[in-house]
Image 1 (spheres, helix red, strand yellow):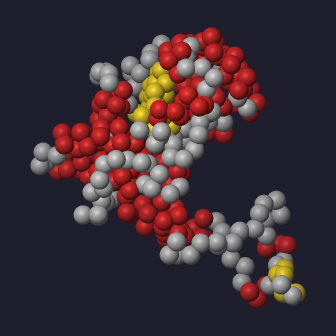
Image 2 (cartoon, rainbow, N blue to C red):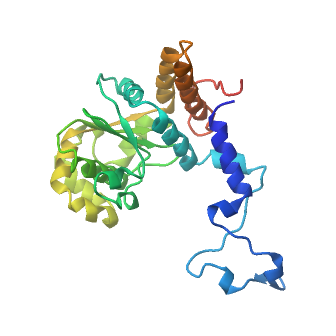
Length: 288
C-alpha cells in the first residue's frame, strides 16, 4: 500500500467527522418545517457566511476528492517537504536538462513570513516553491485548468519577495506540469515563452488583477530583474513521472534510507499515474 493512502484515509475521516473542520450540525429538534421549507434559528448560523450541506455520499467521496487539483497538490507538497533538498534539486535539474549542484528548500505558506511579506499567501498561492543558493524554482501544477498572465504575475510577486531578501542575482525558473504542455503557455500569453524579459513587465501588469498589481508595484525594479533571469518551461505529467522513476531506480540499493526515499517517490508517482486527468502514459504500479 502506498503511503499516500494514509493521506486519503485522513481526508475520509474528516468527511465523516466534520466537527474537526470547525463545522457543527443543527439537529432536527431545532428545525421548523413549513411545507417543503425548513427554518433554523438565526443564532445557530453564521450571519456573514453560507450554510453548508453534504451533497456527496461516502461511496462517491473518494473518487470526487481524488480528482481535485488541491488535494493532489497536498501530496506533492508533502513529498517535497519531506524529501532531502539535494534530491529535489537533482529531480528538477534533470527535468530541465541542466546541471546545478544545490539543495532546494521547499516553501509553502511560510514563504511570505520567511521573507518579510507576511500576507503574501493572500495574493499568491504557489503549488511549489523552492529556494537554493544557486537558483530558485516555482512549480505550477495543472490538470484541466488553464493559466494566465495574472497567474504569472502572482509568481513574479513571490519571486520578487524572495529576492528582496536574497538580493544576489541568480537564475529563476517557473515550471508548469500539465497534460498539454505543447499548448498551455501558447494559449495563455500574448508573447512566446522564450521571449520573457523585463520589456514585458508592463504587459504583465496590464494583464493582472489589481489585487496583485498593487503589491507588485512595490517591487517593480526587482520584478524587472526577475524577468531578466526567468525561464518558463512546460512539461507533461509523463515527463515528471519519468524523472521520479529514474531517481527511484538510483536509490533502491537495499539500505533502509534508500528504500524510504524510493517509497516516498513511488507514492507520488502512483498518484500521478492514477489521476484521471494526468494523461500519464506510464502503466500504474499502484495496484500491486
